[in-house]
Length: 236
Image 1: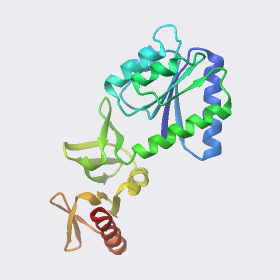
Image 2: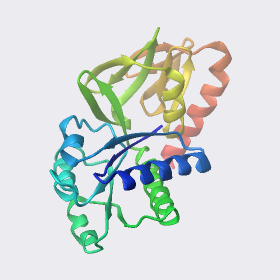
Image 3: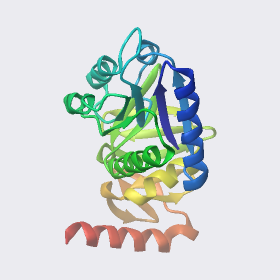
């Protein structure tokens, strides 16, 4: 799922952007969740690095888009920022906050969809290194290599990381789909392991960071094959 925040004080543009995002989602097949804000201060109030993309109107009455972006960058270096403006000169200032792009008003669907596609492409490349996990009171950025394995217990997930355990309510299937393309494999129903941290296989278990995690019989052949491919690719 892609999480997008839109801060736009003019209702007609806010409605238009929301409609454009829905149209793009329908056409591309992307699952997109949109949170709408009427001003930058409303967005910043509870900002906890929970978004993948932020669309900011440059001119807003209480906290303008540029100031909002500067505050966002103090806590979140990864989120993609796109400005919505009727003045092209703001694009130059955008470099200071690492903005990806800007869209000029009046906004056309073609121009908007092109920039949205570019932003999503950048986000997907970034997923190979970082992802966001929920924590009590907010969210945290986690680097792929810092995650040893994911454990499923009833309706909760436990992320075993370099800095300890992170537990939250979640579905293993969602994280399996997200992490499998970047070097993870589900060795049984309850464990999704980072192949980078597999130290070996012994007695039907994957040894991950010193812990023995059972490899289910139906998954054993596939696990060994994927592990061999991963190790071979890493050593080339």
